[in-house]
Amino acid sequence: MILALTCSDSRAQASLTPPGAPAPTLRTLDQVEPRSPISGAGVITQPGSYYLTGNIVTAGHGITIRTNNVTLDLMGFCLTGDRDASDYGIYVDGNFGMVRSGICIRNGTVTGFGKGVRLEYAEACRLDSLICVSNLADGVMFYGANGGTCRGHLMQQCVAARNGYGITLDASNGGRCEGIRILSCTVEENGAQGVVLNGNGGVCCYNQIVSSIIRGNARSVQTDAIAVEGPHDGLCCGNTISGCTIVGPAVCALRLYGTDGECSGNVVENNRIIRAEIGVFAQTAPRNVIAGNMLSETGISASTDSIDTFVLNNLVVEKSPGFSIGANQVYGPVVTASGALSTNGVAAHPWANFQR
Image (cartoon, rainbow, N blue to C red; front, side):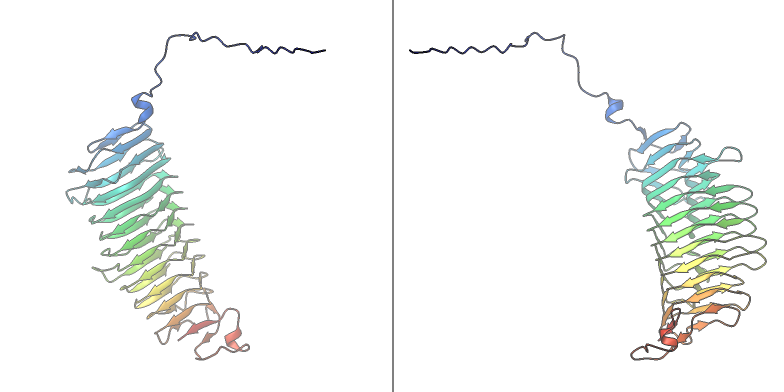
């Protein structure tokens, strides 16, 4: 008996009729580029994202921001002023009772103004990949002076070069500059100080300068590369300078100064300091920490009224004497012997300083 099997395809076929008329699928211009273009100097008054369409040359302020939650992308272009001392290249313009926040400025050059970038009555802003060069006064100013506030900012991968001052945190006359972090920046060849933490009569605390290069500043004025100061009833405390390369010439590569005020609780650690009259100077600055730094052709000094300032694990080369510290400070022994280090005695002290 022969069985014949017949197979059939029982799969149904979907309808080929279109569900409706074809609709456009291209994005609108606002979807392609949702940011607003800027082609000249002016004032930003609405939150949003803005970008430069080309270089801008102007008299007066460059771009002023008078609102919150703004991103300004310079797109690699240059904002150039006419070297009027009263003008600002980019001005974050807050005031008492109307503090600006959530502002990001990035990716371009600001030159030829009185101050390159100025943040006033502002908090929680970010400066990223800016070059502030050849401005008459400050390359960048965080302004919290005269009862104002400027805090919680991040400045990273920026350059401040050949200005009057490099970067200034100004909390003078009853102001506040707090929690500002300067990270991986280059500050070089400015006429006066490279970086100033100014708590003169105000509060300049809990700021950080980290992994930055501070080189060749104080070219026109015999002064300091980095000044951390809280004189005249001011307060400059809890700041950190860490992992930086600081190169002279300067009177002091880094000065902690608190005459008639307070400059304490600051940490200067793991920096490379080269060629200055004094590398680190604690002047009327008690209870600070100077630790783990390497200094070449310069040394560490602390005035007698810098009580309980800790000087630990530092290395000084090509400078003798490399340490000028006394009974009022707390310090590890200074080891000057050459050759193999001993496994006992002062060379084995866990907080020893070394001089060669």
